[in-house]
Amino acid sequence: MLDARLERKQLVISLRGASKRASAGACLSGEGLRTTTKRNLPAGSHQIRVALTKKGRSLRSHHKNARVRVSLTVGKQAVASTAAVHL
Image 1 (cartoon, helix red, strand yellow):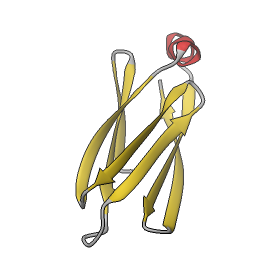
Image 2 (tube, helix red, strand yellow):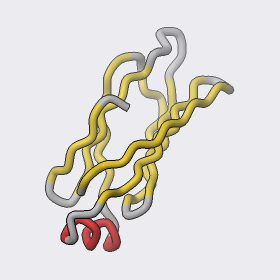
Image 3 (cartoon, rainbow, N blue to C red):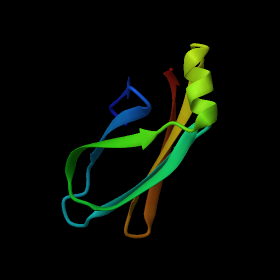
């Protein structure tokens, strides 16, 4: 995960797929975020928009942090990372 920023009622997450041979799948989730799955992402950088749930909008109005979990799968290999994002 390269960057995360807030735009209105959604979180825009930038990530980079490193595999040049196969397409990857990405799953983004977290407290206050709607779980989003993207499949067949080619190599390179991508921006994925994740909608805030009602709880996420409440966290945003109280200036809280949310934890974002990003898992990237290429073939049978998977890697995951988490990050805190200020809403």
